[in-house]
Image 1 (cartoon, rainbow, N blue to C red):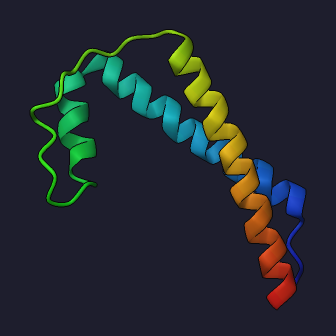
Image 2 (cartoon, one colour):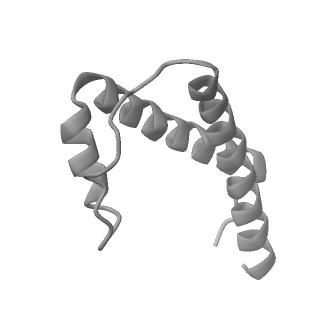
Image 3 (tube, helix red, strand yellow):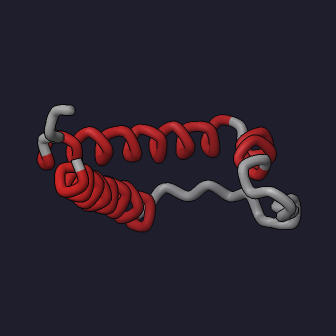
Length: 87
């Protein structure tokens, strides 16, 4: 087996999760009810229909994208490091 490049794995996961976050945001902006229904299907047994659907672009949106990127990078780094350790 080949060793994982820790930095490349971190960046790859960070970009992937950020893209997913942006696609989710796009769905919420274009079709809020559909997005709530679609993403609610991933949360088994929890009824999301009572939640307000008001997509707001602001500082929290930007912070969420940054947190997604940084968190994805850190998770990718830990994954690659552990993979290399147990290889």
